[in-house]
Length: 104
Image (cartoon, rainbow, N blue to C red):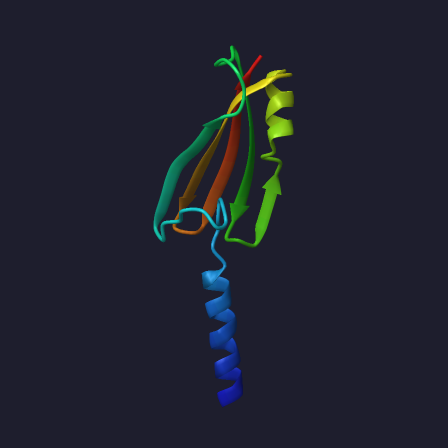
């Protein structure tokens, strides 16, 4: 019985700590995260915008394509001027990471 209790404690701790993480290894808040990271990568500011997102639920299921190529396709962009990454996470339950590309 003692081993079962320890095992259940470890499993429940693992499940609770398996949070929805929008951007591993970057900035994370335990209750809420919402921030943008961006950079200019090419000339000009660009007149077109494309966005691609991925989402995570409880850190158990993650779906989507937040790649620069997917964002370029969504906006019909051939030459990238800037890339921004928008991250959002609430209580480790739900998280998103979106890539926004601006260009020509």
